[in-house]
Image 1 (cartoon, one colour):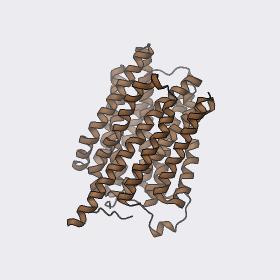
Image 2 (tube, rainbow, N blue to C red):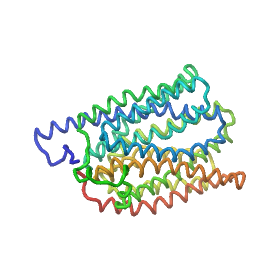
Image 3 (cartoon, helix red, strand yellow):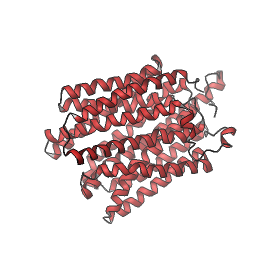
Image 4 (cartoon, rainbow, N blue to C red):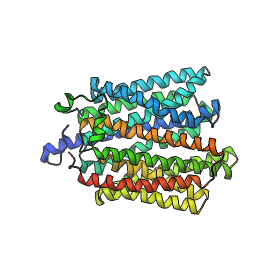
Length: 423
């Protein structure tokens, strides 16, 4: 699809489409705020209900099976996309997950333990499937020049949702009860759908080219991943980023458990930690991300991010203290939610509809959850074999992941420089 908002346009003809572009980006940003705000309800509730039903021990096993269900959901998504197109596939996805969470709410009220597992798995799956559809739309609507300006603020506006939702959960969880947030997760998808529909109507529905429409290759066009080396490098970078994130997360949780045996003190500390994450990401999204993307080459940004994380991993190894590990996690998530996401999405803009809407679900959504599950499964196996892992093992994994991430970011940066200009 050729963008209707090309910089080549001029005069009043440019002003009208640009106003529609801005309105579409506002709508999709507000829609994303509702989506990720609802995910904040789901994420905290799913973990809490799972621990209540089964304890924390089996959680890595649940994380390990998520990729299996991801394969099925992504395949169904690809089939629906072929039949309905991008707009109505998004609407159908939102309706399906809203109904699934409503059913989970009803089942949880009966005390069903199976519903707890189903809700945990769906909460892990739905957010990445939907978020990638949002970015497929954005990448199909903006050219690279506009994306460097808009991507940061889009993320910043979206981050308002989880900030408000987190405050709401902290204030009303004991009043409403955890299960009520499952219902609120379902209801949050209603305004998400309405605002996303408005964004599509304002900007136009991205469609495949005539050539793509007549091509085979399966529902997900997996051959495209092999045809475009940049997609392989993106998948590798995402996987390594999740290796770093999971190991750093576990290090923080282990240190918090030792330093703060009182659960209420521990909960308050973690709430403050993630508030720092959201504040850092908010600042990065509105101020730093647009500045860096417009001033620096994309290859420099892509390589610089893991360099920062490698420095933090070295500090974690040298100073085995909670503040160092906590700030390593805060910086990782702050960069991940802002400059990393915004810069990575630029790589999709010059590519075809099928890459942006089909292959992207495998490269981004599946790789994200598969990597998380693989690390969780590997650590579980190591614990079964060795008993207790030494504390230094987690920052060592983080350091190795960051080093490999830098190595993968170098060819990714070259691919970014060699890619054709965006629409």
